[in-house]
Length: 245
Image (tube, rainbow, N blue to C red; front, side, top):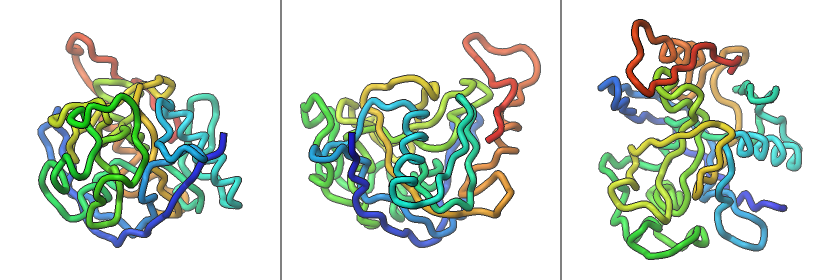
């Protein structure tokens, strides 16, 4: 199967505030300028977002597309262990901070516009992903950041509670309006197929060579978040040993 990457746009450096609902904390992330696709990855000749791919499939797709375009693959993959070379120039998943910054485009509310005009949701009564770029873009020229398909990010959802679950953001065509918000976070296992979940490509080097942190993500912070002491609440599956990431 072939894929259409679409237009990549470099966003200016800036800052975004992220909310950790479980911990009740907020943090402001300062971002370097970075490139991100104006729409989700689509299959050639279809113009609809790639959907129902696992996080690991999304990671492998990034590397395949990098190689196909003569770029340095971003990820070293060993079974389910993935390491991000932050200075690689290839395609990659955006960090959660990059995704929310690209989505908000300077806005602070739940949506960057009237939801019926900017996003495919349950309000539209459709039963599959819709062609990209049919709704209104945000101020950065990003289409379908909300609705149509959820989009995988690089980050863990909450390693202290959900183990190796990875984040996806944005909502899908099947979701009610309350679930389709700039701040909404969902997640699943890296090898799980989640209906209506695709990806949007970021690209290029960020951070510092040899340092496992960039754009709001930090391997050290992942380890700190995974460290839970004392008796565990029912249903919690903390990530006891983090893979090299």
